[in-house]
Length: 127
Image (cartoon, rainbow, N blue to C red; front, side, top):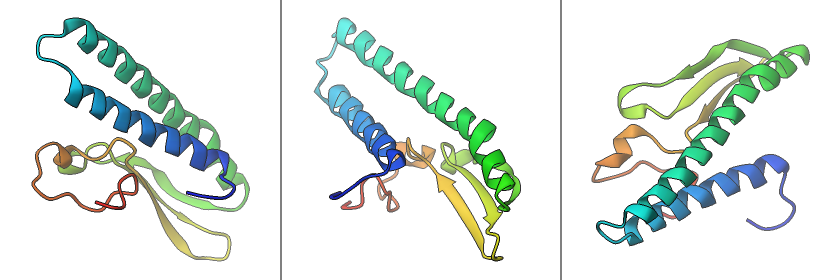
């Protein structure tokens, strides 16, 4: 990504970076290296804590803000289940009447753990 980035783009790029770092650390970890496993686990828990905080802040601040500006949020954010676990989505209608769907799955979806073929993902557009 080049040029000026919004704070939202910077934050999401950092999350994608940290997920990729965690994956590389796990793949490079030697069998039986308990100390490294604890370090990676601590880093992962920190990332999950921050993501939880982020989504709770959206629920507390973003959706009420959008509603205050005439955006009709159609229900509450929904957490998907089963193969799509890890995904959250909500529909909303802009003041001019157009309906949108906002979908987020920053850590990927559950099916990706053992699927031979993955769907397109914004964190890995080249795949």
